[in-house]
Image (cartoon, helix red, strand yellow):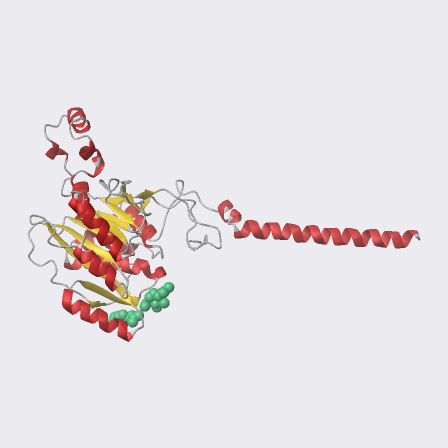
Length: 373
Ligand SMILES: *[C@@H]1O[C@H](CO)[C@@H](O)[C@H](O)[C@H]1NC(C)=O
Ligand SMILES: *[C@@H]1O[C@H](CO)[C@@H](O)[C@H](O)[C@H]1NC(C)=O
C-alpha cells in the first residue's frame, strides 16, 4: 500500500475516532446536564447569601398591614382570584374557637369530603372544644361538576371556592386562599390546620399536640417521668405552665431541610432562574401543616411581599423564613402512608394516603373507639 493512502486511512480512522469521542463526550455532558450536575455547580450557598424578593425587611410591612396601615412600599405579590363561594359567617360569634381545619380538596372529591365531615372534620366531635371545618377548592371547567359543588355548598355551607384553575401547579393559590380566608373571615381561632383531603387526622391528637408541641408525644408516653424531670429542670411547678402561650408563633408538622431537585426529568425540577440556592428554607412538608393564629396571620401578610412560588409548602416555608418563624418538627405528622395496624396509630397526628373514604372511616372509627382519634 502506498504511503499516502495509508496516511489517509489513518487520518480517517482518527477522525472517525475523534468524532466518536466527541459524540461520547457530548452524550456524557448531556447526561450530566439532565441529571442536574451543572446546576449544582452554579447554585448559590443558602447559608451565605439568601435573599428572595422582596429584598428587605418585610416585618415592618407585616405589622402595618395587620393594623390596617398602608406600608410605604407597594406589595409585590397580589393574588387576584375571587371567592366564588364564601361561607363568611362560619366563625361568627364563636367563643374560644380552638381549631379550624382548612382542607385542600378538589371539586370532584365529593366522597372524601363526606367522609371527612363525619370523621376528623366533624365539628361537634367534642362538646367542650369548638372546631370548624371548611374545604378549599379551585375551579374545574365542567358545568355538571360545578352544579354538584353548588348543591353541596348549599347543603353544608363549608365550601370556599376560588376562581382559579384547580390544578397541581396552582396549589399555592389554594393554600394562600386558605390563609386569606382564615385571616379575613375566621381570624380568632387559636389554631389552624391546612390538610389535604387524602389524609387521616386524629382530631384528639391534634388537640394534644397543640397543648405541648415541643413535648409531643413524650408527655403522653411517660407522663410521670419525662415531664417531671422537665418541670424540675425549668423550675416549673405544674404542667400547665409549659403550655404553649397564646401569642406563640407555631408553624408545625414534618419539617424538611432539603435541596431543590435539579434532575431535569423530575416532577419537582426547579431551574436556577426560578430558585438559585442550594437549599430550601426549612419547611413543613405539604399535606398537613399546623399554624397558631399569629403565625398564620403574619404569614398571610408576608405573602404580599414574597414572590410567588409554585410549590405551596416551599412557598409557606419562604413566608416563615422571611417573618423569622422557625418551623417546629413533629415526626407524628406522616407525609407518607404509615402502614396501619390497630396499635401503631396511638400517637399519630396525621397520615397520608387515605384516598379511599371507606378506609378513612374504618381507621378513624377504630382509633376513636381506642381513644386515639
Ligand atoms: C377571577 O376574578 C377576578 C375578579 O373578578 C378577575 O379579575 C379574574 O380575572 C378572575 N380569574 C379567572 C381565572 O376567571
Ligand atoms: C392557575 O390558575 C390560573 C387562573 O385560573 C390559570 O390561568 C392558570 O392556567 C393555572 N395554572 C395552571 C398551571 O394550571
